[in-house]
Length: 92
Image (cartoon, rainbow, N blue to C red; front, side):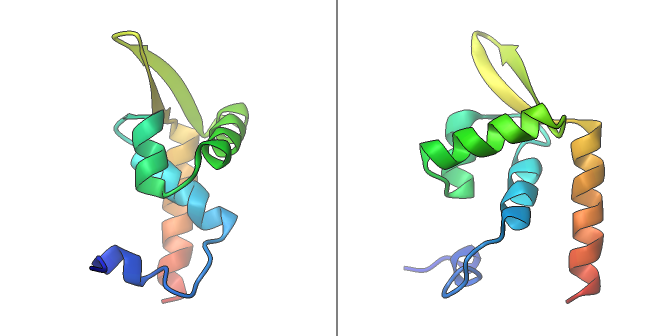
């Protein structure tokens, strides 16, 4: 059975920009690495690359909560996401 969100991906590859925006949206309230990977549909290597880069450039930060790493979107990441969404809306 195909979910409504899956229909958007049929026959279409996601751009890096779309993947970054997806990760930023997922981490706005804090999310574990495992849940980000599942929800963003990324394998562990892809996820590692994206999270490392997003952390390096300051779009995401890692917090330790009860001995677990939780990834959270920074203010810089939220600005990026708002701009991405504005541009996306202007083209649809």
